[in-house]
Image 1 (cartoon, rainbow, N blue to C red):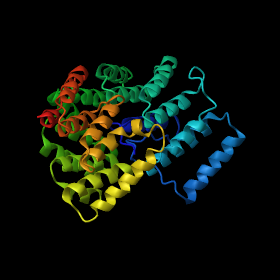
Image 2: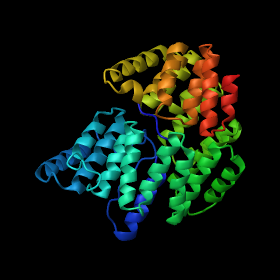
Image 3: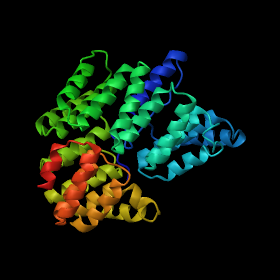
Length: 390
C-alpha cells in the first residue's frame, strides 16, 4: 500500500540513463522509478519470470557477483511496485545480503539497498546508507538526488537544499534546478519556482517522460499556491506528455478535493488496481455513492487487514490507512492516530493535510495547534492547510 515519495527519483532514472549512455553504447541501463506505483516491467509470467529464475540461478552459483545481485534486486523491486506487495522488497534485500558493510559494499549495491529501504519507509536507514556512499564517492549525482528527495519527504528542507546544491556543483543542471524549484515551492516561493520550472519546460528537446515529471511538479506547486484550476491544467498537460500512474493518482486527489468524484473515477477506471488506485476509487466512490463503492471499500478493507498482519504495516502504511479511516470508514479519531503515526516518518504536504482533516473531523483543536507548530518548524507553506484547519 505504497504511496510514492514525491516523484521519487524520476530524474535519477534519466540521469542514470544519461551517465550510462556516456560510457557504454547500446546496453541496458538501470531504471529508477518515478514513483512506487510506476510499472517498470511486467513480472507475473512468461519472459519476466524466466529472466527472474535465470538471475536467481546465476546468483546462486556466484553469490558474490554484485552486478547479478543488483539486477535481481531491481527485478524484485519492479514486482513490488507493480503488485503493491512489499514481500519482493524483502527478497531484494536478501539478494543484497552478502554486502552488509557499507564501508566495503560496491556503490551500486549501496544505492540499491538505499532504494529498497526508502520503499519500506526506512528513510533514516536509506539516508544513512547514502551518506556513507557519498563519503566514499561524492561525485555520485544519483545518490545526491536520492538523498535530497528523502530529506524533502522528511520535511528537512535545508538538508534537501544541500543535495540540490551538490547536483549544481556537479553540473547536473536540469535536476539541480528542478530540485531547488520543488524546495522553493514548499517554502511558499511560488513565483520563482514557477518561473524556474517554466524555463525547464521551454526546452524543446525534452522527452515526454521528462515533460510529465516537470509538469506534475508544476501542478503540485499550483496546488500549494491555492490555484486549483492551474493545477488541473498542468496535470492534464502532464498526462498528455506521458501517461504515468503517479500523475494519475495525484490528479485524482485534486479532483476529489474539488468534489469532482465522477471525474476521479473516470481517470482511474482503466488503471491496475494497485492499493494507491483502489484507495482513491474507494474514497471517490463512497463520496459519490457510486454503485460499486461498497465492493471497492470492502476490497480495500481486506487489503488493509492483510497488510496489518505484518508487524511494520501500520507505520509503513499509516498515511493510506488514515485516509481510508477518515474518508471511507468515517472514523476520525482513528484516522488522527494513524496520521500522527505517519508524521513520525514522512512530512510531505499531503501528510500534514491528512492530519489537519482528521483533527478537524475529530474535534481536536489542540491537535491543530500541534500541527501548526510542526508546519512552522518545517517551513512549509501550503494554502490548503489554512482551509483544512478553519
